[in-house]
Image 1 (cartoon, rainbow, N blue to C red):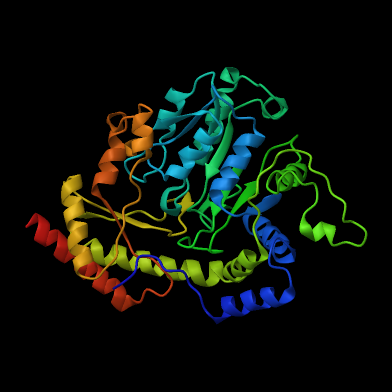
Image 2: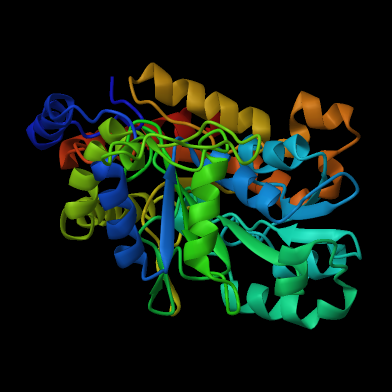
Length: 402
């Protein structure tokens, strides 16, 4: 069976994890702090906070910005549920908008139509590793400044809608020669097991807030929020005579461990010159082979302004419906090739349907979803494996569609 997206676990990673275990630091410690600094350097942002998940990062930032009941957050209908769930956790209202036909990303024109006096945050999602239209997004929130109602100090200081990018897929992607993380106010990465760069479980907040914000001070505050509201972490308390600490708020528990950071440090060191090169080779090979089938719409990974990080291969099949897509996937699985769908749109989920959301309001999202199949992309996928996947896709389409 060709798997969908197994992690790359080799001797370099195993040796670093063992070294971490032997170091005596297995929770948040020197490796986590080093990982944060290296990500900040890689993305060219002032500060980065590593956490146990991207979900935690998104929620911490929403709470930092004071999101509450009655507030609205605009996000794409085409995303994973975590993007919307964190809004619900804060008591606010997710406002879904439709996406672009060509790249699955949130449609900026639709965002503009959805903004109200209650809009506090826009959460674009870099689908599959392709950055959203950040120039247009950043210009939009400035143009809507007169609608923004500030209700706390952070909101008054920004004096506009916050752009909080769900960059779970896009670590290493670029837009106009800037890396993801540096494209808007705040970006949150995922290092989950299936991501390009993994820490098993993990995530990071890339802080890039404009003046007069002090990103280092915000980093320090988020460290407290991510560790029970405790004003010193374990590393700080090991300093001689520095054992005493205080709880300054009712915080959360979502810090990253050094065991996770150990994996991430190895992954980051070889990311651009190894991981991304291999993933680019895989998607380019898929495009070359699958473009010969006139029924397949191959994804775009590079434009004049954007370069994806090749996280997903979301191909679409022309002129089919959801049932035919499912039948094609069934046939591909029968040929021992694992495939997936990214994603079942959030408004189609039971919880959100029960809140009154309906897919009829997001026709482009549904059309993309109903025809989408994600193919395997992972470091150890060989050229022979790629050919096997392509053969399975072509055979399945022929069998189902005739």
